[in-house]
Image (tube, rainbow, N blue to C red; front, side):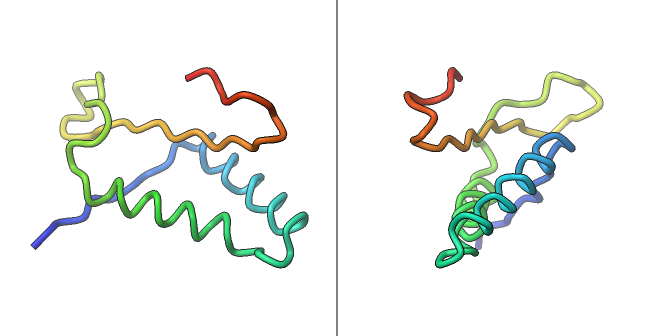
Length: 82
């Protein structure tokens, strides 16, 4: 049986998610929950993959892995520079 991991966001990421969700709900009322549903689906994959991401460099964070997810809208052009 698989063990799931906790997913924790940095404060900046939480603010970004809140802003994107608010924009999405205002501008896509026919699919108001879609952004959060897609985010949850992505995070559930990450939570089931304990080796996904890079180990944290800070020794106080032993066992913590860092994962970068980018949310990009097609209107912005070619994707973000990662």
